[in-house]
Length: 212
Image (cartoon, rainbow, N blue to C red):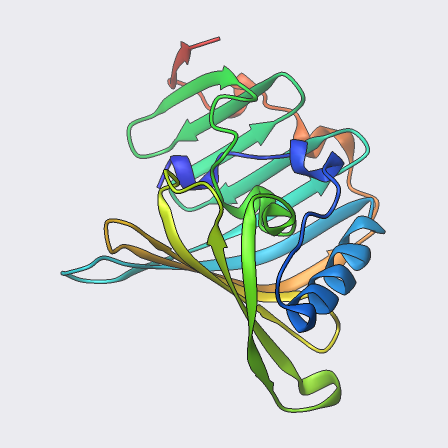
């Protein structure tokens, strides 16, 4: 779970590298144009974790993004994560430990912080069709990593009628399935700078482990 929530902000600077299916390309270009126009984003999300065998689990959270300043924050039940250009602070509430790592420590992971942009680089894609019409239309696109050593075998994006990502389902090579659903999205809001600042005083009696 830890690796799935590390941030990838370098992809904001990558040009679109879509190929193959023209229907999927058109949809993804619309989505990309929409998200690229936002300076800040605030979203409520839910992640459903389904192991190959055993019980499934869910977790809810909230993410804050400031694209011009390249900063993010993720709040979850068992974890808080803060990130900027240089460092990531990963707060594990269960064991009361804070790991501080370089910002590029895991730049291929997919998780809440790059959920709106990861598809822009390194994937082949095809359209799986659509259902509904107008604002109720849902389009599905299947992505496969171009890098065969990737941990992911297949990813499905569902796009709603506002050209926003409704949910992302990730199937990794171990058989685990992760589904991120966006329950609410607020864009271009005035998010205070303090929201993105990790402050040790907010986590008393937590051990800091600096891996930078």
